[in-house]
Image (tube, one colour):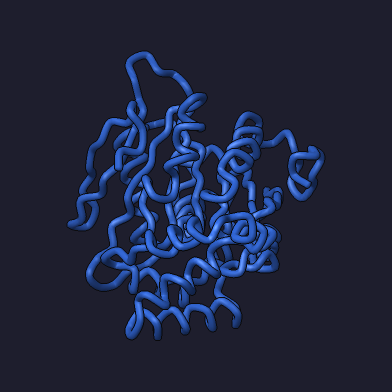
Amino acid sequence: MKIHPDAHEGTVQVAGLAVPFYDTLAPQDTRETIVLVHGTGGSAATHFRTLYPMLAARYRVLALDLQTPAAGLTLECYAAQAAAVIQKQVPGSPVHLLGYSLGALAASVLAASHPELVRSLSLVAGWISADNQQLLRNGIWDKLFATDHELLREFVTFTAFGPPFLAGRSKGEVEQLVSSRVFPEGISQQMELNRIADIGDVLGSIGAPTLVIAGRHDAMVPARQTQLLYGAIPDARYATIDSGHAIVHERPAQLFQIVNEFITDPRATPAGLVHDPIFV
């Protein structure tokens, strides 16, 4: 699946892993760069196939496919991969960084450890550390992954999408959502990282203006968790979208609208305040 007709593909080596990236850079393109970091079980194409071309109409867009090592996966590992892609493709120029789900945690670590690389930070459906509801869901996922992938596809579809979205689909469309669910190599390590990750110690070091976005019907990362993330970042704003966890699939146009407005002037809305009706 090609993410965009104008996206040039390349790789960068990080800790023995070849990390693919997709870059719309063209000659004499002086537009600001936005970098996209996907979430658990996804890729640049599967998580950003709709958002990427929307952003590409206004920005240079750079996305990567996170690579999972056979052992020892950490948020720092993923943050290092994103940093290496930025340093290779956009040397000396800070970028707008967007992370989705687990990618939001990796983006937070990157923004805290490499502030010189990040002009603004958008965190979609992120959290600080898993609470009991998330741990319970992850535990069910783990048991089903070991025993029944068909039932797991139904469970993940049920928890990924918001009730209004599922209610508005036909039976065939829901069956397609279930049957198209895949479990790529490395997803078990990513799910374990979801369980144990804790970015509480780094959030206070994030200096970039930040937008935190929650899905109102998110069963994977409840809005209360996203609110805690928002409250822990010094220069943060908060937005809610009428969606489940799969914001990038359910509401890509609204996500684009909110992110575009934010990165056009990241400090137009003061930290802790919401002035524009788009954020309601």
